[in-house]
Image 1 (tube, rainbow, N blue to C red):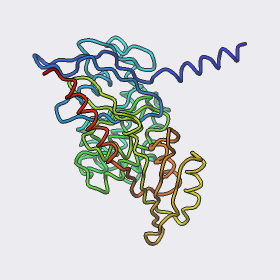
Image 2 (cartoon, rainbow, N blue to C red; image 1 turned 45 degrees about the vertical axis):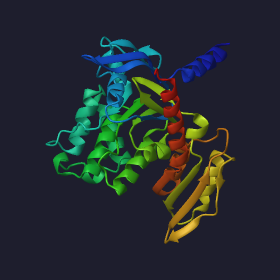
Image 3 (cartoon, one colour; image 1 turned 135 degrees about the vertical axis):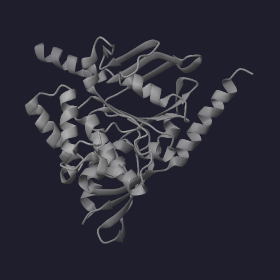
Length: 329
């Protein structure tokens, strides 16, 4: 009996969204930015938040992070209301704004220790959390260096590390690849995929290729509300990856273990230890692009990962056409 009740509670907790925005509205003076916005985020999801510049993406993420309060509506973290009177709930949310909040005079290790302390981690746990973050984001080599002298790629790694230092349930990323060079974008994608395991992620961008490569679901911000794109059309199934490893066979086996419906062509050799994998996801569900990327990143060195963005473009055009038709004359 007790075991059954415990199992029921576990199932219920998994069914509750890790983040929920309900009927959220926000205006700045006379300008309405958000108007009745609804969004539920599940654990393991990477939701792509699309929209043109000035559409309210940053406002949405700031409200979700508890850094800005809505004029109307509610925000819940794992079923609990996020309010100014409950600041402790914000420790369950990791947030990376477009401008990474770094203190340039501090060393990398000192800054991460400071952030861990600000998030309420006890001293013993704080030391372990800093060590884990340095390892996870390949920052050991620069741990003692001053942040102000580091490249933008390293600064982005530090930004992701600070967002995840307290092992949050929710990760909010505002234009995380903006301004990075192509190699740094590839690096950032791999880190985001690794960071998404076991938590919910909202990824704000205006670049369709980023969404196609990373996200399990796509929403578009229009007129202060979210429009969910047609899942069948927006879920690009054709993927291409370039991996670095001695033998690609174990990588292919790991993909097929993830989902027996995944199709993988015979790996194409691109040179010494570099292989191209053409992958097709199973129709009607199955493994997500993010899950595939996680397998690739953990079984080999993932050099690049891209999805067919044309399906996503078609879904976006279809959604926008529908909104235009529904607009009052």
